[in-house]
Length: 174
Image (cartoon, rainbow, N blue to C red; front, side, top):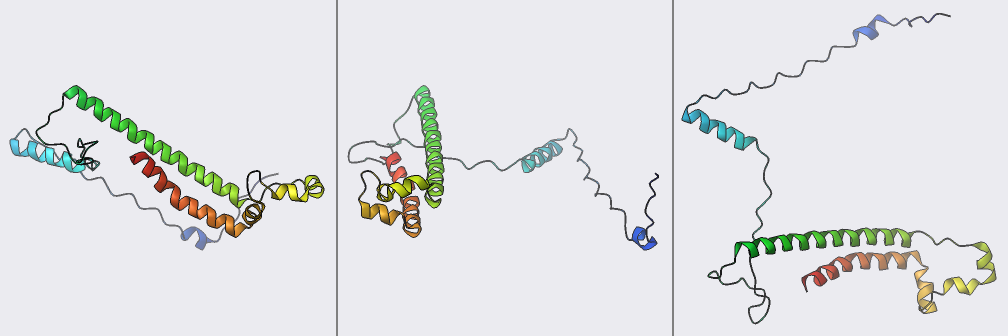
């Protein structure tokens, strides 16, 4: 058994065109040892760097008294070791709060998924005890019945999503 290449219409082969070559890269600038050339090299290097993150201004604030939350007076000084320790602590606190908020957001997403899915019901238990499944321990039967309505569950879920991040931020700022 031999394999023959299928015969193709000559117009098919002619319909292909070679892909053009990419443009040649720009030539690297050549710098000399002159002052102006070295300055130009520095400007070129600076222009080629990525934009840095914005500077975050950190200030000491009064924690108590009538001036609570206001900036400390500018004539106060801080030892370099204390400043380093304070900066390290605030960065740890910020990382922890970001991690906490991310975990809370993930928890809300999981809870929303759970609320949107119908509960798994076992037919045998439903036939034997029809009222037992509709009652949630510690919850009024009318409330439990209302929670079975998907529209009510969705409204509650949206309310939780809107209010919980604000509560978390208030707790962190307290």
